[in-house]
Structure formats: C-alpha cells, structure tokens
Length: 433
Image (cartoon, rainbow, N blue to C red; front, side, top):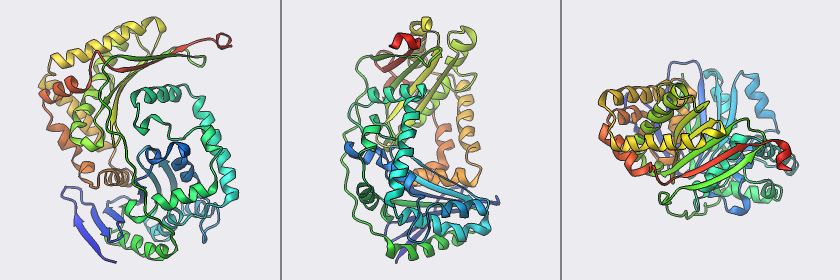
C-alpha cells in the first residue's frame, strides 16, 4: 500500500499521512499526558434519502454494539478500565467517534475503536433494543421547547436543502427501519476514502500513525465495503426576498422565544464566513455586544439574546435569538433590524473592530489547547474540506478583516427587510386543549 506524506505549513505541526486507499491520518504531538483519537466519516443526515432520515445517527448508536472480535459493551469496559473517555457525534455533514486515553494505553485501545467503526456486527437483537433508545431520544427532543423552535427555524430557512430535516429523524421513520438497511448504509459510507483519522497527544506522530496503519492492515481484510453512491444536492438557496414568519404556541414556555435567521455562505465558501463570525460577535456574543447591551442591559426588553453563524458545508445560516415578554416582540424585532441597518450604513470603527477581532480569535485559540480540541478541529476541517489549514490560520483570517469587509458582509447577507422569523408564544396548558 503506497502512501504520501506532508507537513502542514504552520506554527502548529500536524503530520498528514495519506494511504493509497484514501484513508488519511493526521497526527500531532503535544506535551499533554493524554492522546485523543478521532475518527471522522463524511456522512451525516444530509446524505440520507428521506425514507431513512435519521439512519446516520441511529448507526452511531449501534457502532458500540460489538464486532466479530468484541462483544457488545466490551470496548466500553476496556476504555473505562484504562481510565479513558469515549463518545461520538452525528451532524448533518459528518459523524465522528473518539476516545481520550493515557499515552501508554493508545496502542492497546486505538485498534479496537478502528475495528468498531469499520467492522461492526450490528446484531439484530441489539438493533431492536437500540431502536427504542433512539425513539426515546426523539421523544425527549420533541418535548424540548428550544429544540422545537430550532426545528421550525430550519424548516423555514431551508426549503430544498436537507438541512431542513432533523438529524435524529422522525419517530415514524426510525420505527420502520430494519437491520439490513443499516448494514447497507454502513457499507455505502464507512470506507477508507470517506474516513479521516486524527490523533493528538504526547506520542510521536510516527508512533500514532504507525499504530493506526498496523491496525488497519488487520482490519481491512474483514471489511465489506461497497462503492458509495454519489449524492446530488440542490444548489444553495437564494437569500430571503421577504420576511417569512411562523408563529406557534408552547405551554412549556414562561416567555416568548424569537429566532430571526438568514441564509448565508457555508464551508464551501469558507472565505466569506469569517466576516459573518465577526458580525455575530458584534451583534450578540457577550455582555458588550450591541444587542445584549442595548436590549438587555439598557432597555431591559429581553432576558436573553444571542447571535451565531453556523456554516454547514453546503450553506450556512446566521441567527439571532431572544427570550422576552410577549409585549416586547415587535419592539425587539424592530431594534434588531435597526441595528443591522446601522451596520450596513455605518462602518464599525477600527478600534471597535480590533477589540472584536481579539475576542473572536482568542475564543478560537483558547478552545484549541487540549488534545481533544485539536484532534476535533483537524478532523472536522479535513473531513469537510480536505485540508487542515482552516484549523490553524483562523485567527489570521479574522485579523485580516477590515471595517469595510464587515460592512460589505452585513450589506450582502443580513437584510433588514427580508429574513426568516419564528416566534414561540407562551400559553397555558388548558388553552391548548
């Protein structure tokens, strides 16, 4: 098996090792007495056909149910016995599995995690049992007001892109899935060319890479991979041309919940996302952000307000959310659009921008200190974009922005006259009968 080898150009020094079968291994040594192994697959709910929506998340649950060489629960016990931690996560665009262990236990436990994700047994009795667990997770999600409002917002934000569907799927769909569908889904997407392995901790990159390669040589003959199906996605959706509103009632709420959102560039247009990150910080991240200071501290119109930029791979969404009394809804919506118009018409001062840039860059830097932080960043960006540079040069990109860049982004993407809006109104249980 041939490989290629490269060094990422940065003060960080991850080593990138590519195998001829498409598997990429990224390793970095840091002076922390732990090693994080993160295994990423370019598969999430976005690639699922509607009829199996939720399969990627359901499969994540089933990955820890054993292999021909590991009984269900055996890997969990091994990790716990060696003082390690393990978990997994599924999103619209990826699924990843990870462990954090002491360096001396990496060679023992890393091959088992690779075997779990590459050659799972997916036993039928465990499938039916875990199906009930996932259904309960969906029920809990449906009972959570914040998740409900997020679901409604995504249904409006994306009309055709699969981001409008929930990652968990629906109870109706999950209850109809069968083990054979899951086995086919695994064969379709869990193969080396769709896989990125990141390892960060206090071992040499050569040791970590060789451990993964040796494990893969043992696992590969057992795998039953098939060629993945190419998925055709709709084009990115145009900005809203008007205000699209949805209003609902929720007896669990004590105050109204408001979410305003805009369609914005995603990771596929990475350079355009940096200014949006800064705009989110200016508007609603922290106690000195404009909307927090104006609407919560000075005017006391809201009890909470925040802004965020979420750049999924195909397209992103920019949102502003608030918790507030019902009587303040119209005033707050107007204040938010007025502040957006101000950003469009009045460039932020260089002094203000310098402060925000430091805040945004430092947040990124401070969240990149542990082995798990770094392994996650490398795996995320490489699995989504095929490179690790964005995991390294993000602060530089933020500091390169000018007041004109911020103003242009506000003018281009954050219309004060066209956006999506979801409002959840509090109501008494008796009024819903």
